[in-house]
Amino acid sequence: MKLSARSKVIAGLGSNMGDRLAALARAIELIREEAGEVTAVSSVWETEPWGFDADEQFLNMVIVIQTAMEPWQLLQLFRSIEGRMGRSRSGRGSYESRIIDLDILLWEERIISMPGLEVPHPRLADRRFVLEPLFEVAPAAVHPVTGLTVAEMLGMCDDRSDVRLAGQQL
Image (cartoon, rainbow, N blue to C red):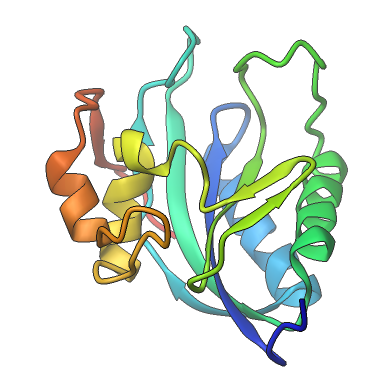
């Protein structure tokens, strides 16, 4: 598939280890340097862990990137940034605490399925910690599978976990 010269990609960022705010800021800095222009940045949201128990709450946010990279290249870059920032993956396939987590949520209107990457993110509509910041930067973005906007998905989301604006912002 030939992609346009620059694609609009929406990514989710999260951290619940160490200096969480600094980790988010560093990840955005590396994405700007290596992936393309960051055109929108949501507020930072403090959230309880989703899918597992942890002592530390997460800080989560969403950014919009204009990139010339292809999906597999951006995924590899995200994994590289995570590793350089100190994230190690246990390989158990379960949720766990992390210094940084970078996920591709939406890639324009595209549906992408390849090993290690499903876009739109398969659990996007089920997670308030993603939908709240996504609503800030792209409320009218459309999920290419369901046809629902971010605003509609947020209104229908059954996730009742604690999601609130963080006390500190970038």
